Amino acid sequence: MSVETRAHTALHVVKGAIVKVLGDEAKWSAGASVDGSHGRITVQFDRKPTDDEVRMIERLANEKIREDQPIEIHMLSRVDAEARWGALIYDLFPLPEHITELQVFHLPGWNVNACNKEHTSSTGDVGELLITKTRFRNKKQLLEVSFDLVE
Ligand SMILES: [Zn+2]
Image 1: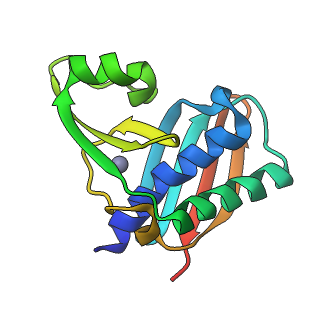
Image 2: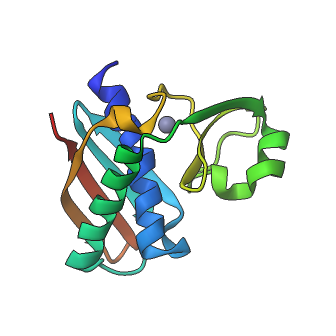
């Protein structure tokens, strides 16, 4: 599978780790991008994380990868998806109203998100990752977490 697929899947794994460490306050994603083996996830948050917190996010993400947990991909109606998971499936920029069928990425106990991209079948395929940079933008109350897959 492509490195972009692995890096994209890593976004979900890192996002789950961010919420585990920083709490529900960090549950809204404001953006995500992948470029080769590099990824960046941006979440709404109200402060700069400590170095210990950043190391913990990296550690939990890599533990989840080593666990090799199967990834569930669900195709279902938007109504059913909202009934099952609520607003958690959405990011800060909601999907247009006309979209009535969703693909939902679900890593039980870790991350759930409406996402129509391609993913690995389990977390182990992501491989190890390193968090390379974090940036807190106080005015916008946004936290960017950048990582690289270790090749
Ligand atoms: Zn995805």
